[in-house]
Image 1 (cartoon, protein in one colour):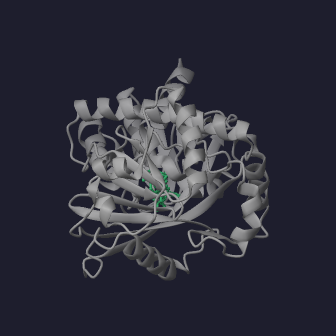
Image 2 (cartoon, rainbow, N blue to C red; image 1 turned 45 degrees about the vertical axis):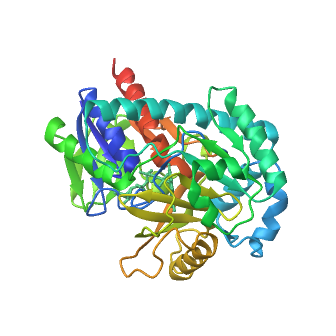
Image 3 (tube, helix red, strand yellow; image 1 turned 120 degrees about the horizontal axis):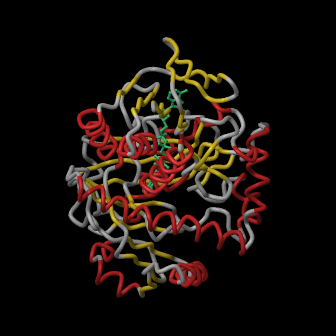
Length: 405
Ligand SMILES: Cc1cc2nc3c(=O)[nH]c(=O)nc-3n(C[C@H](O)[C@H](O)[C@H](O)COP(=O)(O)OP(=O)(O)OC[C@H]3O[C@@H](n4cnc5c(N)ncnc54)[C@H](O)[C@@H]3O)c2cc1C
């Protein structure tokens, strides 16, 4: 059976891997010239198995008017006269109840915990280097109210076997002494020893090499998919910019661009791109070993490959990249202000980057069959695509394989 996977981000390549393991002949298509050129390129690298909190939560709707007028430097919210965006906003507001927040957070948590086990298996079977490190993760809170809300979330997650815990600032400093050189006034932290770090791009590249070498998968890079073709009411292939590619099944892993090729998603679910940014710099004298987030400022410091990656912000501005320079400048200023010794901020060897997170309104990815038989989806991973890649890749491959028997 020939499966075509559209999109060579971390989700597409991981999906291709699990399909190949099940005996499918696999072709991966991407319009970019290299794998991991989209959101998977230079993300924060966190395998955030314990921090799966949904974006839609109680209290959010009341903050939206302020966000439109720039009340939070970390979030840009530009209202757009676009049906998909309006629909997304309405779905999002509906998800902002305590009940929906709890359900969405717990669903993604369970997926993330399975993903952790699957990545462990993969690492045991194929020992390739993607800067993986059992780093742990600390989320620092400035306001006592936010820490109390985080504590409620910790209790919810403990019910599912997740081992996060609330720490005083002193306890957090004992785990990560670099916090002492940070300038924020923190009320406390939430810590997970089970969260790890790894370079999503390196992982995607290594897995693509393995797919080529061991499973004889084909990669059609620099090749745009223009339409999913059907015959007798089911997906029969893909119209590529340079011809037709026939297939028994097609799996769309197109990240933030999923709607542009597929139109409506199952249940009419809206999906929006959310722009985020990162800068990668040489380590400073007090670079953290643990991955550290400042929850209020929405910034992350991750040490990978002997460098520090600083990532953050969430801009709801469509596919607009025109403010990238300004936003990256703001991210750097914020990082320098919060953690002046974490990185060598003056270094000329700096890599700036922006990516579009594929965001659903309930923060859950869309994994499973599309309306057209033979077409499958694995998209909408939002803030956690790297974390969830193994579980959702495994699941869609399993569903597809079971549908063939
Ligand atoms: C700043 C930032 C920090 C982040 N940090 C983390 C983190 O620490 N941990 C975590 O788990 N997640 C993180 N994420 C989220 C994560 O990066 C994404 O969820 C994940 O990369 C999505 O992967 P994907 O494969 O679905 O999308 P992408 O990587 O964007 O891949 C989609 C691919 O589809 C291709 N494509 C689109 N249209 C077509 C077409 N018509 N024909 C052919 N190809 C097409 C694109 O070229 C692209 O390569 C972060 C994201 C950002 C922006």
